[in-house]
Length: 115
Length: 112
Image 1 (cartoon, rainbow over the protein chains, first blue to last red):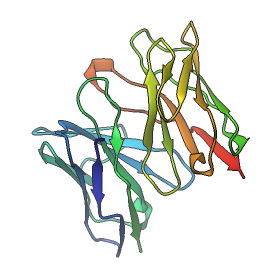
Image 2: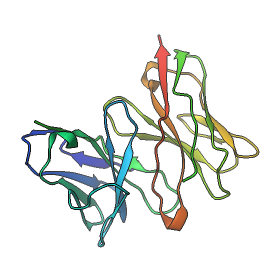
Image 3: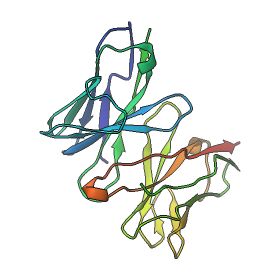
Image 4: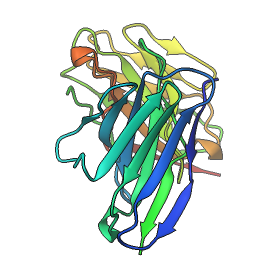
């Protein structure tokens, strides 16, 4: 079945560092990918919709200059957390789907810890 | 976004059937009902989806009420690996978007 690969699985870094997370669709082309954030014991919160070849669409309250999204190809979207601070520590998850009423396929997530 | 209501938690015994309910009284005519589950420290996993008719796949069955205001995910024989948070989601198709909006879901505990 369709697989989405997310890398890295875990990042620990110092405050002020920028961190890039990659999301790849391995066996299908994804014109749209989604980025979520999940805090402990909470549900997934959609951050933004990543559109291949165009600007991402951010959900209300998500800073686009803080969370940079690039979707330069049909198989790769990246999320960069710029100048990360401890409050950005979270579980970041991406997903992608084939257009039409198809299921979304999720990556295994990236656990980001900012010291 | 049309919303869903699920119990916060449920408990089951291994090898017994599990019925996970979901209420979605504000569902629109073109909303599909999707179910995903999330195991600890993993991304969500697709389980099943449907529109009006009941659906079966290798993982589960989905029973949809005739008025579509509720649905039930059925795991026919729960295993310890089925312990997860189960999310019932109405697929948001407004403006062509296919984004998923997650609620709190139901945490399923499976006892050996």
